[in-house]
Length: 196
Image (cartoon, rainbow, N blue to C red):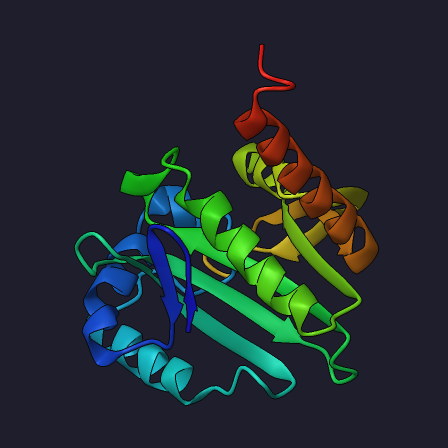
């Protein structure tokens, strides 16, 4: 479990099946993702059961449920694919549309990056559909750097449409520089020396 000011990143529970199905069936979300749609409640229940059996310490996927502390509702999910070398990981995530623009996505992303880099990972990568500009901006805001574009790399299993994919990466060394700079800025702001 990973905790932030407003969120808990935790293992999935059976009660998460209905809200998972609800946001994954939203066409504005599903168009950028690789899962089959519609996702029935039965299929979501089975998916949640599989998620709950994953091990975050072992190579492979672990899907974190993003829970709002305020009301204990499911806000979204954040997947981590730990490579066999345990030094690299890939991220993928979704936030329920009602919470877009709330700052929850960056809060969850920064928490998982801190968790992974504190465990000694060397590199974290992510990718997104080129049409999904908010996700690309989110990754850059978190410190990821653009690393390329794969033309017509991903096929939507629901529509058959081929889409371009943007690639992003973040090294531990860059993460440490960025977080040290952020800490220094906060300290300076609190002391008033750099406040405007």
